[in-house]
Length: 98
Image (cartoon, rainbow, N blue to C red; front, side, top):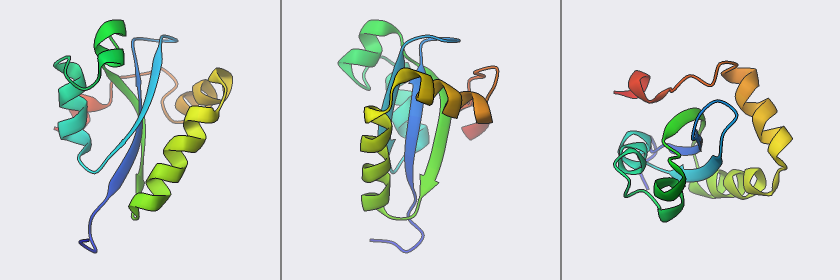
């Protein structure tokens, strides 16, 4: 493992207050690009979940996976609060990555 490797836990949404998807990756730009092209996952393609509304960075893959699992267990209200604390308008953060 590279010492400078970063891992990302991210949340995608179909729109403001819409359907949510939680994922983990070591290539946020590439992974979200796949979701946006409709090949990231069947779920995101089916429900049009392409807007990157939240992400966080982890140095260790184990931490990132643990956090992803934690967020997946959270109820919807907690996820929405997490998103809105950092991104109150649910802006698409993807253009800022490129």
